[in-house]
Image (cartoon, rainbow, N blue to C red; front, side):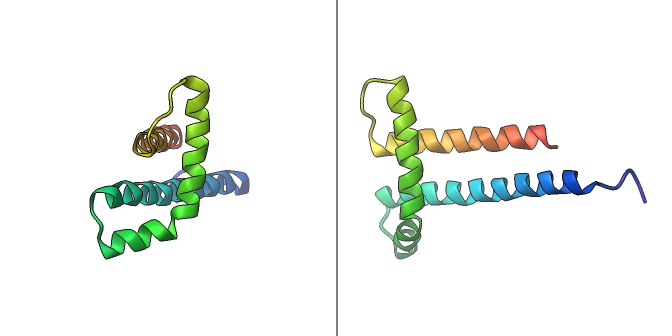
Length: 100
């Protein structure tokens, strides 16, 4: 057996981090499907977009509220989704660097 075995608390923290990373990956996929459905109207994109609509709308409203505090002009939904994708990517990269 190499190294020290992980304790219960360490395993629990890493499990929650892994769960958060999976949730951000799913949200990234749903945001990407919403953005792609503006350009292409395929059956599977429409189905994926309608499935994730409540989550994407919730996330977009929070990003829009945060951007509203920073800027005074209103942004389009595509711009809000792009900022959300960038924010998710940065959070994911930060967590991967922190826990690797």
